[in-house]
Length: 391
Image (cartoon, rainbow, N blue to C red; front, side, top):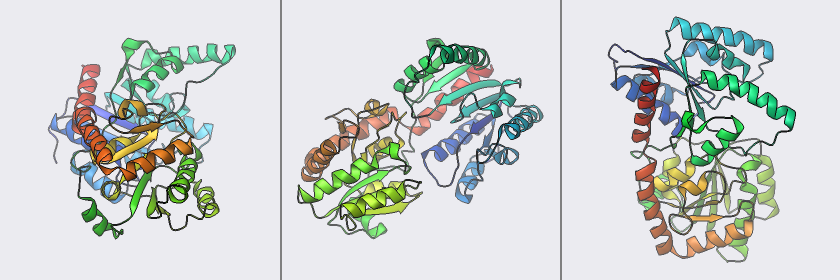
């Protein structure tokens, strides 16, 4: 797609490794398309080379991969000296490409690399995506934090939160005044995540039609709470007698070995499958009976929650962070206390045993997703914001 001559040049500086086609990668692709449609140019920086599919789709939408910044912005093995050198190179890139606005995604605002952005003349929009709680600081740290963020709020035009939970936390942790922040929910591609026939999806994936499938999609780290989900599945199989239950885990991470040991401990070898990193999460959502999100840390949003809602599958998730903004307990899914494997097991068993109830919750969730989490709508909000900031 060829862009018209553009009055605005935007750099999306993202601490993202685009190793698959996920919802964050699709956000970049849709954003590139909307910028191009309005005659602007979007440069996209990642921490690693995008997989060929993502690069091709991004460039096909009119975006430009900032190849000069990929190795520069890698977070692997970089010391302070390298980051400061990188900051100077980043500032040079912004100047040479006449960047009007930089959107920062995933990076910590105090990362020395971002000094190059702060010393440039570009407008700055900061997007807060991190899943952490409100920081607890002593008096001295609080004073230092106010001084640092006082400088940053003078440079950053807008702070964007991906949920109201994050916006409230950000106003405390970053000392941001409410008028300087706004909420734009994360969103999913409703053309990809659509309700599909479960049996057809299982045929395509080679999954037995009689299985009761619980799907979870997550980085394999302790904070995602998958250890409690495995305990819950053990209860579903043994106490509820659901011998056809199958937990499918999509994702990768350093905690997988511990999770596999837990599976062996409970004798769940036939009931848990690790899928690894997947680009076709939409297919697995379609094949599932329900999607479980057992996080024990405050999720900023919970992409897989919205993806499951768009795919017409019922969700059971932890009542933590921004998740309750997506799932209304007993109306568009089920919520349980984080770390409560018993409540998780009871909820899973109920949803599997009562398909009509699950179907009603999923239908309610689908309507909510179309209303609040449509990716096309959200990229329009972002580009409107960019134009307002620059002009």
